[in-house]
Each structure stands twice: as C-alpha cells, then as structure tokens.
Image 1 (cartoon, helix red, strand yellow):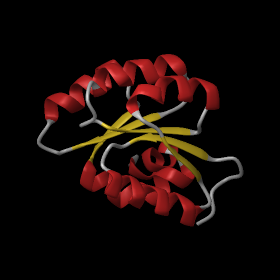
Image 2 (tube, helix red, strand yellow):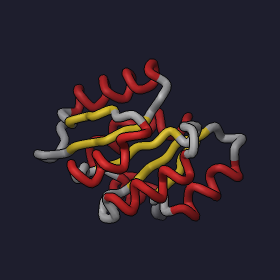
Image 3 (cartoon, helix red, strand yellow):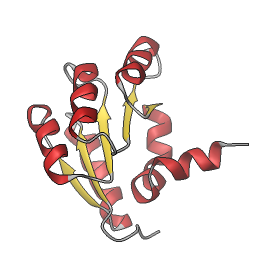
Amino acid sequence: MTAPAGRRVLAVVPDLFFATRIAATAKAAGVEFELVPRERAAARAGESRPSLLVLDLHTRDAVTLVTALKAAAPETPLVGFFSHVETELRRDALAAGADAVLPRSQFTVKLAELLTWGLSAIRARETP
C-alpha cells in the first residue's frame, strides 16, 4: 500500500515504543512521519502543514493541545487515540475540535490505512 505523493503525518505520542510502531508503519507505507514534542506541536503544525495530525490523548494537557493544533492547522484532520475506558476524554477531545477519536485498539488496527489514505478513507469504509 503506497501513499499518495507528499503524504505527511505529524504526531504527538510520548510513548516512544508506540511512536516507533507508528513510524515503522508510516515508513512501510511511504508516508513521511514526524514525531514532535507537545511543546512544539502547534508551531510545527502551522509551519509544516501536514496531511494528518495524530495525538495520544494521554499526553499532558491533550484537550488544550487539540485546540491549539486545530487553530494552527485548521484544514488538517486531527485524529486522537485513547484508552477505551476514558469516555470523558473522548468527548472533551471531540468538543475541542478533534476530527476523530479512536480507542487505541481501533487506532492500531486502522493505522496503516489511516496514515496512507487519511480519515476520509476510514469513514467511507464505515458508512453503510
């Protein structure tokens, strides 16, 4: 599965083991992947205009970061992932502007397609 030319993903994922997994999936799909620290994420999103923003919602001040990322790159889809038991966190992230919030297990299953084709491909597949 090869990504469209110029596909770039910017991610804030403090868990380096999981970030490495995302980076490996992106590389295999031909997607440019950049891991950024929380403190630089909004500025980098505004500078680089990625195709997709990925955020681990267990990052410190994640809901505030969602707002900042969407302000910096409003046209870029933002996908957050979280522990499935944190339903309030999911609701808060969506209210702050996240385009989609997936439990970590679903995010992992859909990762290659999400990185390669983006959120619209995942949504199209889920629509009856």
